[in-house]
Length: 213
Length: 214
Image (cartoon, rainbow over all chains, first blue to last red; front, side, top):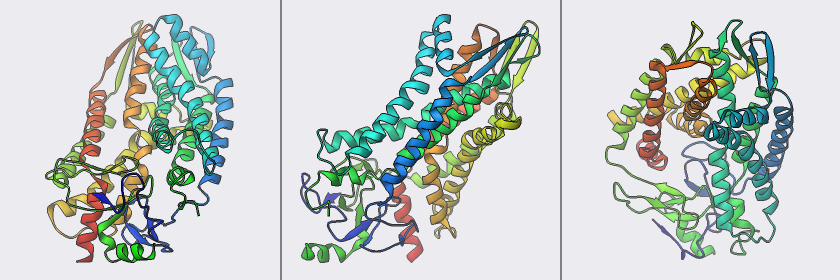
């Protein structure tokens, strides 16, 4: 595997007058609309990428608000009903002394979503601007965001399992709260935001000078 | 630029562009068992394995059988104050099925059962004809594109971690017993991880290309 130039200033498909397919990696002459091998739509840089990123990101952020304010779980024990929000559930776990699990839930449902919102916004704002962080560190940030996003779904699955399992009549029963829906939506929207991001833009923005045309 | 472009244009089949950073690479033979990564962003491009196609088929069949086991046997059993409650994966999905929560039930079913299965079947559809015969199945390119697109949305492994969290949450209230479906699901996750390690999408695409044009 060798690039046509040196490792420090590698030649991109765009500079060579070609367009690369992001699905099957095949190249075609610039201007080709559809990949001959896999049939995906081709574009040298996805022009509407940033618009879609912002749209999904804002949708994710909006859905995240009710996810935190409304109850995630409704537990009925011997006639008394208690409603737990995301954060409330974490605090309860800490009180029970389950530090490990409380931390998993805290990370999956609060730290990861928040970090994702900030990271995607940071990456999107950085496109086309001179940057302090190197292209490489921003690329790594993108890969981490893309990889980690789906793990936020843990809490939705926890609610599903608990509601299915804890149905002991009057003794104890668990029902899902409306926050489970908005949280699932928020995670799906932010995953879409990360998927819509064309990471090739990171490498162009402060690239070799000729990639930004 | 024109010279170089003309030069590279002569044989496009030998060139690949990194999907993450657009760096152009000329393909050369990569030994089985070694890896080739992008020179600029270090994304893995190619990792040929001996007998990869056959292994992918076997792992996909295994995963399908495990998935069938996982949805037909009890997943978790709960005992408290003389009461017993058994739950299968299907029950976990149906927990959301009343009224307002129906869309969520559909989504959970899709994420943990339907999408992983669709992904497995599309990989099988693409790879099996090439592993045991020569000509790829019609529409193989579309099927493999679907498999690539679905990768982040198949969340069986996230579900397993979710189960672990749920178990700790109710450990104080009741006694929990793991059912056979739990182990089938855990095995399914491991098999899927192996499949992803062994399968190099670029090699599948190239084989597909070679055998379709011939």
